[in-house]
Amino acid sequence: MANPFSIHKSSEQGLSVLVLTGYLDAHTAPEFEKAVETEFEAGRVKLVVECSRLTYISSAGLGVFMSFIEEIRSTGGDIKICSLDPKVFQVFDILGFSALFDIVPDLPAAVQRFQEVPVKET
Image (tube, rainbow, N blue to C red; front, side, top):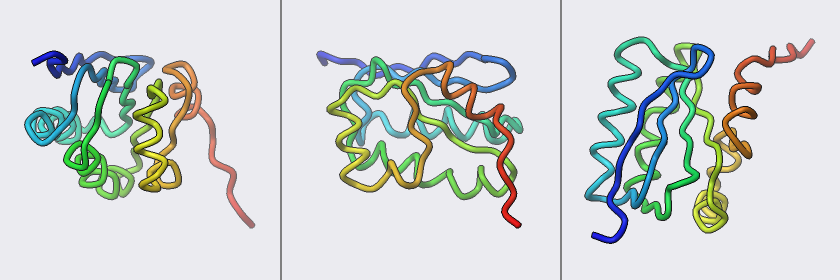
């Protein structure tokens, strides 16, 4: 396998960061799903998925994002996606994910987004 998949977990200012590397497809999506599930079950609902080394994503990989977003947001959390390769971003964008998810340029921008206070509409 030319691009083996891996996930590196870390923490940044109280946020859980999952760094994805390689191909996220039907064979590797369960590993990503388990990583997100582990964070969620531990009460860590402010997640950043860092994708600078993600070279490919399939519908199975995209499905993992979709399967958790409502539940995470219902608990006051969110998933921010950062550092997407242009080809991978194109897949997210074509399928409308850029309207559903906060996709930012890099990890500092993702951290900043979590620190911003939402403006309440009157």
